[in-house]
Length: 350
Image (tube, helix red, strand yellow):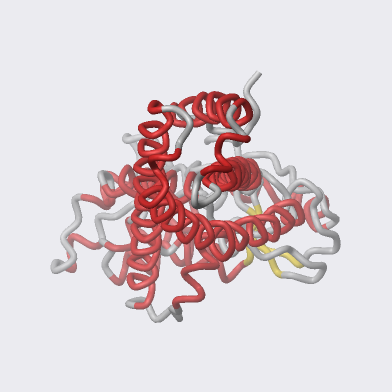
């Protein structure tokens, strides 16, 4: 059974095979290395041990990052975050600089003492290992810089929206949001971009339509927590923990968010940020996508489908109140939600 977070690569097998072979050869010829000007056998042992420790710490980091998804509790994610800080600090501030310097030292020693190796084959093995070490160190540096630049670019985009950006914040973000979560968010963003009109209707609404959507948002139930739900202890948008007395807004899908967080979200998105279900299931987004913002008459064609086609359709403002009759079915669950139970029945369709 595979261990979660352990990503065994092909080069790990190559390294382990070289490590086992070299240990046997160096052990057999240990005394014969004493004729060398420099202790190449000591260099081999230290270098292999350091590389083995480096790769082991990478496995540990992968295991820690695998436990930092939103499906885990805040305390566990914080503990894994602190663990990643320690592991990555050892890797970047201690082991990586040491391996760079030690590889250069090994190159200089090998150049001056290559003729004293016990066997001719060891000379080529030593040379191949040095080349492998340089390639690995260069790849690690390039990959790290590339990831940092990608995160920095994302932060610069946030700066255009008025959010503070710092180089320190980029580093913290790289630790707090693992690569797998960042890449998954990127794939999701690209998928959303293919249907931006449906997912971000707020970008295409006229002022009249914005007022209708705002009315829909304000009709959603909100309350102050009397107890923190055990199965949903934090806001999935800002990732801050809920506290007793926080004002939260409940969704038809039974998920809760800080009022200020979800209100801002729903002005652009009509889907729950946690489960992606529609918050306003009766809102006709296809009608919104055909609107022309520069025509006042067109803006009044946005509507919410609440009646069969044989009946008259409501105006946007009236539709706001009509659509939210579905959410009134959730009022009976507010007492349970306020007392720490996050389960809320979904509204039945009319």
